[in-house]
Amino acid sequence: MPKLDFTGLNAAAQATFKGHFEEVVVRARRRRRRRRILTVATVALLVTGSGAAVAARPDGSSPPAARFGADRTPDFIPTPGATPTPGTGRQILTGTPAAGDLNHVYLRWTECRTGCPLNWAGTDDGGRHWRTGPLPVPDDAMVDLRAAGPRTVVAWYVSRSAPDSRSARWIASSDGGNTWREVTVRRVDALPAGWRVLGQVPGPSEDPLIAVDPATGDLAQLRKRSTLRNAAVVESAPAGAGLWVSGWTGQHVGDGGRIIWTGSAVEASRDGGRTWSRHEFPDDLTASDDVGGPAVATHDGHTVYAVGRVRGALVVWRSTDGGDSWARAAGTAQVGDRTIRAALRPDGVLVVQAGISAGEDPLMFASSDDGATLRPAPLGPGADPRPVPGGYVQTGWPDSKGAWLSADGVTWTWLDPPELS
Image 1 (tube, rainbow, N blue to C red):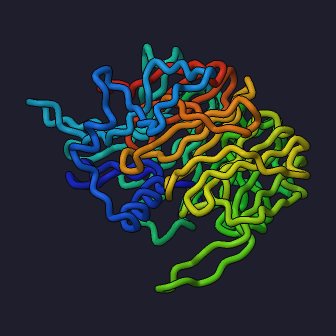
Image 2: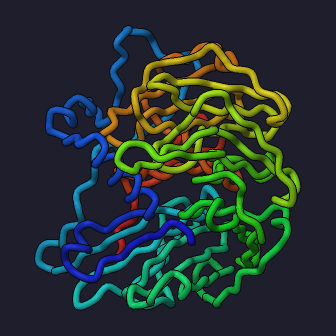
């Protein structure tokens, strides 16, 4: 079952319109664990006069030479709930953007008056103009909308009145949303080359990996699940880098019945998931307390980094042979229990983000020496990119509904959610 995009059925649900279900779960668990309250003082510390979010550097060191070039830094300040337009009673609620390439971006949206019919919106010119149309799903549906190519969009949906997720269906459009058709998932021993792999919740240890044909919207799913536990697919790995999954090999029950995952590991496949190789790390290296093991960063499948935290310190492992062997790099930093994201840019710079929401007081690091040093960097996009034809996209979740677009993974432009009517 993919991660979900909820749409509300009443005023309360409308005002708290959620993004992907995975994001909701992560934030709720982190909130319960830390019992933090984001105060006005915290917000003031994160916002400068230019509206850019910055992370304090206790040692006063300067940013690394490798620049991020963002014309807008991440919106880590939570966005308020939607507000009806004065005098109209209208309330436009949008979902997370899904990019087919740097020009074609889609999202799910709804306008709530007497009901909340679900619609799609799409741009063919990088956000200058938007087209809209109805989504052929029930008004009460939970929807996950994905772009598989410039003109190919798929959506997983299930009605809230359905008994369970087994009633879920897929629809696809190969003409930019103008027409839609029902799609049946085909079971395969290996995912076809060039198809876009979709991240899901539950992950591949529960539901096998699924991929979309970027030309037709057809769907294929592996017959077998990942052998790792609590696993997550690495969505930032380009298609040519192979399939990468991060997770755990074991678990035990801790105090209060809490599950403690053990045996941090990554698995890679070069043949579409038919066969897999595994590497286990000596420490319980993790990027998150919720899903997956370490954050995996690669742009070619040959040079690969596994980044996480061990007892509150960043730890970096590096492989130069596609994951067959690994060596621990010297770079480290104190990050507490922040969530970790990492990416290897095409120019060879390793980008690490610790903290993905305002409540985590996010920090940014970069390394241009193979992980030997991690230098504090200006907070900006680049640590959680998704490859698309012609470049990369990174969404603004969980605190923003917009997205960043980049042709080179270094310089980014911001795409605001559209004003829909």
